[in-house]
Amino acid sequence: MTEPIPSNGSTTRTLDALIIGAGVAGLYQLHQLRQLDLKVRVYDAASDVGGTWYWNRYPGAKFDSEAYIYQYLFDKSLYTDWTWSSKFPGQPEIERWMHYVTDRLALRPDIQFNTRITRAEWDDSRGRWRVSTDTGEQIDTQYLITCAGMLSAPMEKVFEGQESFAGRIFHTGRWPHQPLDLREQRVGVVGIGATGIQVIQTIADQVKQLKVFIRTPQYVLPMKNPSYGEREAAAYKARFEELRDTLPHSFTGFEYDFTRQWATDTPEQRRAWLEEVHADGSLKLWLASYAEMFFDEQISEEISEFVREKMRQRLKDPRLCELLIPQDYGFGTHRVPLETNYLEVYHRPNVEAVSVKANPIARIVPQGIQLADGTVHELDVIVLATGFDAGTGALTRIDIRGRGGRSLRDDWFTDIRTTMGLAKHGYPNLLTTAVPLAPSAALCNMTTCLQQQTEWITGLVGHMRRHGKRVVEPTAAAEAAWVRHHDETANATLISKTTSWYVGSNVPGKPRRVLSYTGGVGDYKRRCDEVARDGYPGFEMH
Image (cartoon, rainbow, N blue to C red):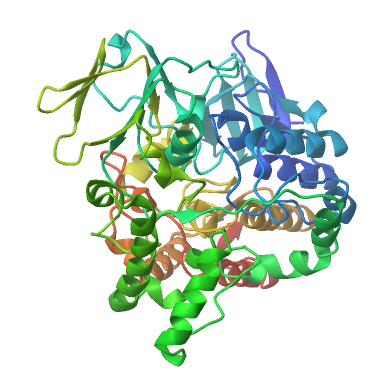
């Protein structure tokens, strides 16, 4: 019988596993652990399921992975009984799909909403975690499994004076549920990453005035988003087995992969291939053109110039080209956004592009945004598309204490280290998804990678139960070996030489390291499978 945690009057619950997060990973992890007959519960700060697709409900939010690959692949009927309306559907439809999965698998009884995990402390004497929530509940659990997402800790407090603004201010990752009427409003958008672009292209024709504050220009690719009728839906559903068997083994978890080699193609063949993948209207140019662009600066420059040329043809205006087309980093070393008529937005008379590279935002004032030179842009609404503390932020905002009281927050602000992105030395029975040093930290179709990681975790838990083991922890040596391999792989790429959230440079004080494993989704899966097949070497169990 497990000794209960002293509750000091608060509720105490005893579990085999506590899962943080009711998004893509958390829902599937719950389903799997229930099949092992574990007593398991999911906690989420939101009021319903969805994870990313609960919080990111800003105007224009949609997939940029094809809908038919952003699905669970463990159950054919679950897959085929849902029909998407288009290739890249929007947030409301994605959220409905998440509800469909939750209800189809009857997961709701084991999910607790409106509850934030605030602290988790490992009790070495008992081999269990003591977990606290913001509602005063205390949970005693054997396993703590984090499915909190890699882009779920928004960078909200980024400018001095935000609280003084007389209008309304919203971060895209915390968009209100009630509809916002932006008509006759002067709106400022800060940030032109993938999220900012979706907002800008969606609201430009709705608002009285739109000012876009631009620091780092982005390479963009045009999205083609055909609607799906019965014939199109039947066609992708017929590919279920093919997708199930191939996606986990591709380089990025998408249906397409790198199949051409730069050196063996003639200049004419290269141009023809780039034109073809650009015309596909997807991320194919980034994720399936020439892998050499991530390693060779000359090849990177040629492909980058191809994309610049496509952007110049649409922008025309030399000033806009200078503001919006990157010159100082290579295509694909940042996150590449898909867009629909985004560049054309800047030709509208009610839209102004404001460069803040040499004249940065100094503060928010009651009237709007003040730049370093004293200029004030008067606004009614400010949209902060300022990104996230990626990979680490969701967990460093929780007070997680491992062996001897060591702090995960302190550890990761010293050096970002994990064992395959699945566990952390010093933190027994802490099993993780979507954290650094795995493809799921950035470079993957998320459902592909999150399914793989949760299945691996389930396999480990099942192995321990079969062998009578109650505690597991990666060794320091195994973690060091994985970090070395990760760094050797990442540092060979141009990604490691580019300043972006991919290396944590958007968060003050965050150690610089490529957050995502760059060796490929298929290679990562193979390595994880080998560890499981060989009895989990590098993981101590007792």
